[in-house]
Amino acid sequence: GNADSLQRIMRMAAQRLDDEIDAIAASLARGDVAGANHMLHGIKGFAPIFCNDQLSEQISHVEQLSKTETAQRVATVYQELAPRLARLRDEMKLFLEA
Image (cartoon, rainbow, N blue to C red; front, side):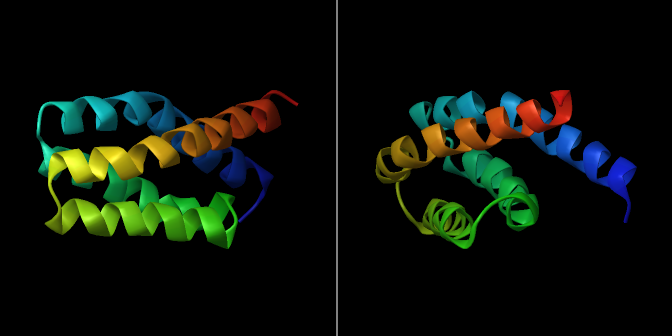
């Protein structure tokens, strides 16, 4: 696409991360692994466009775990991922502001 399309998609992705980083943790705290999986699945879909392979793989790993593991197990692994998602969101916002 073009620069406008990239900015539109990035704005949407940054907003989604803004909305869902804490919501995933809250879902897991309530034991709602299915809800967390739904949000992680959406993030997994757009992540490869904006981040490196290592982060994409980590997102995929946590999303996959959320299909089969307990909320407590996923929450433990998600605690490592959440700050990286927040950094991605912040970098997107900085790019969009520039």
